[in-house]
Image 1: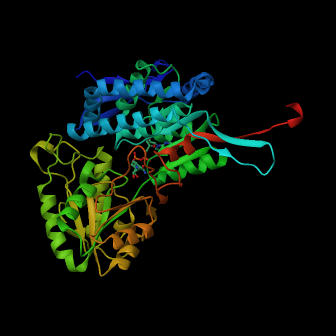
Image 2: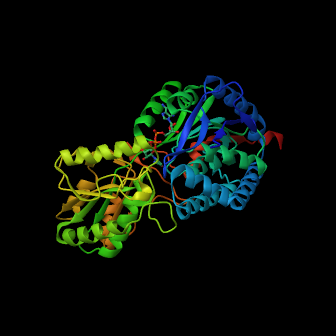
Length: 486
Ligand code: NAD
């Protein structure tokens, strides 16, 4: 078989000349090698940073409107190349074509949003206590940005970071995920084909603890924007803290989904299934703790299990979700299910690797529903990042709130109720960055801020205009008019 070799992309060209060490990427659907990607070293990272620093000089001077126009061209080329992008996502992540297309469309929308921001990039005009003094704020680029991404929504994760970084006038060293090397490489090539000057976006492949770590530690990289696990986020935060670099952290979640006694149960089941199992639960915003009022618990439980039984795994158009991203992660998820059993949890549905003949080689774990775990179960506290969900019952709304808030994480939440009072009371008190009433624990749209509290992040919000505070420096400019010179 002819294995595709993915080099780094530096200064508008393939870069792997001095490095002949390659890592393998497997298709999660069938465990076949689909590509090899370069195992980057200090030399590669250094090279990418030098190029990004050089490119910054001109890009920072370019007008934001022009930068936005280039992003518009990128969005158009992405739309022309949808099939290519979809195919890469399908083979690298094991998503169905339908889900991959959804992700490509969302990423194009993200590009459109940030392209138009080039015509705004608003500052403020300020009053002053001093006569004849006039002040205003402007947004300035930060410099070279190190963008580090996971593979769960492989293109969307890149789009969320790269477009706001570019429109603000920064240059980029993007660390591709080990699980999605080709999408990062292909996007960088596509962007330059669309008209982005060379050197502005550079892509480094390789192992996070090596090449990612080198980017994070480099004082020439002025901002680290990281999406990934809380464990890695903490390491990155420490390093950035020591060297006083700006850092944005979008981390894990353990998101509660509350079903009240007055909820439309069919609607609640529909959203609970999507929230828990879409993308095989590999969503920071996946609902992994379902909290149900006692009086409707039995009915919800029955409908939820029946719904899970109908879910179809695989990559075909009519499939609900695909495999986990790699074998190691699959084994981790299966291990958490074993721990749940050891703790006394009862597996109501699923609980193992798929035994379907067509999926046997892939990293498929069944949708898994667990109840009767002890109150102090480690499963309630840990982000499993797989198709695993727990059920708990409560007597009333305040009990539901205290269970929902019993977590170090605070990313998203959902509540199902017909009462606007209950819905809003809960939404205002639940500890998280995104609270949804009567739908799922789904994130944001390009113009809406997304992010979490506690172990889910460091308080930054991407995307939305709030992302401008991540990717630009605010400067206050004042002028004092000298009346003697009039
Ligand atoms: P991960 O932390 O293992 O890896 C994420 C990225 O960080 C990868 O590119 C990896 O190469 C790199 N990396 C790893 N160690 C590094 C280091 N020491 N220095 C620099 N870079 C390093 O996460 P993952 O398992 O790939 O992704 C799943 C996690 O991401 C989950 O916890 C999930 O909740 C989280 N996530 C969060 C959001 C959000 O917006 N909050 C979105 C998607 C995923």
